[in-house]
Length: 312
Image 1: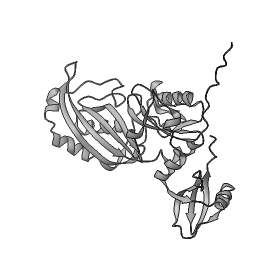
Image 2 (image 1 turned 90 degrees about the vertical axis):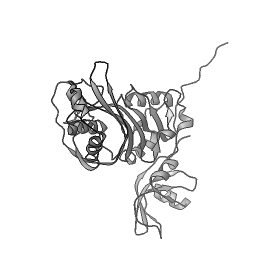
Image 3 (image 1 turned 45 degrees about the vertical axis):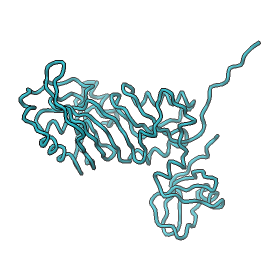
């Protein structure tokens, strides 16, 4: 008696996945695993994490990859550990470490000094990204150029660090006998802020060098790790957030009539008298399907982007 094996499952629904990335894995690895588990190539992400880092990755599947554009720019929250007393070539623990400063140099640094240094890195600041970042220089990633031996100087950029909170300070000694100060922090910042660069600049400002030894992203916009699935036992069907449940967290929602749904789907402008102006609003059909994103001006809504109907 022959047995016919079932065909590989191909996942055709659209939606957003919240995943808790483990350490030692690239964001590309997470995307590749998700593609295999979901049986679709159409998987994208709203911002990477370094292999050393853990925490929240937001992935989009199928048509909902279009939503990632509106998530990637959201503010982010991190928990991090900054080690003062030694710099690294990558501004984190994955790079080569420079010589540690003498213990005497660290002994004179008080918690008040650390708080003052952090205050200088809080608010609207100008930051130079780490040279091993994913920023493109002449079409190539900066970290690829560094690996090729090319000296990379990235332009400084304005970022906002809205919260930079010290959670704890521990003084210790490494296995090699070097003294250090570990500063546990919580950071809330704008998209494009490099926590590695904050660690580097804090150490530089205190005159002792610094680098990042641990990083966990706990929030992107309204999404938190508390709602994220583990990659190892990921059930895509169970973990997938519907497009409508996501846009309800991101935008004002415009509930459409059947006629408006048809018109908007055909690219027509629709009358929405009494609605306040909005640069972006989510248009939802009577059945609860995301039709698209619209802009509303003087009681008229026009399409910014349409979303394909999910294939169940």
